[in-house]
Image 1: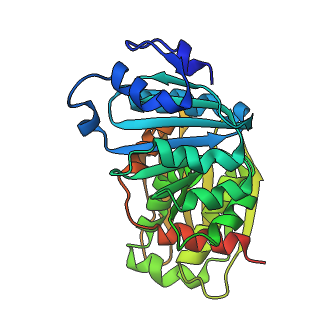
Image 2: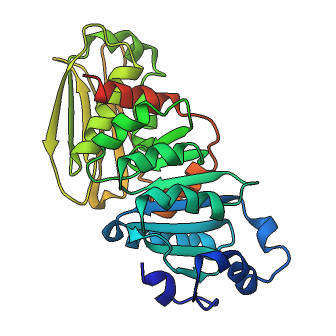
Length: 305
């Protein structure tokens, strides 16, 4: 949380009481058009040890003049002082039961509000759903939040940062089914094998595929542990003699795709692997206004008892 103060910026950070935040932001952002240029409020919420990345990311967006950034770490303070730097506000150690009040007071009510949820008291997620236009989940172990989100889908739109990072992989797999012979073979595939360094991302992809495409009797899912630095390394959808394949190439800068199904010639191609930083992922989420029904369907499949 300290890097909201120490990060090099043309605007000097200051510590102010909560009641003076609005005035402080006007003082450090005196340009007449600054507020009109903003497109949303982005709020990062979580425990202190999960907010360094969020602070860096939101300060980049805030310094670019596109969003009002609010970073809130949970603690035991009822009225902590705020650190203000340009369009970024940081509240350190706020009692969880007051998080929704802080967001309500600091967001720009005339613009959309996106909450970047990095963990915390589960009840806080319920309260934020009434204030946010979109909640982007982002936890190491997300199952509890996923279960809670399913009950809140009618209150606000939900997504997940892992889901956003899987966009290219999902799109490439979906493109296979533009081929008539692949669509005809859909009910014949019997195995899905995924290798990668993030088991949760692999589970998300598998649940998306099984809940989005009719595969007849279904197929067996195998998830293999891969390199830590690559959430997904390879995906194989296959039966005894047919296969759809996606895998990262050398240097992890590209994805190789290959299709081999009966009645269609075997073909492969190479596409660049998109570099999806947190800034990229959040920027994309800010452009989405509607509920993501594919994500909702995927999470419901994952948490179904």
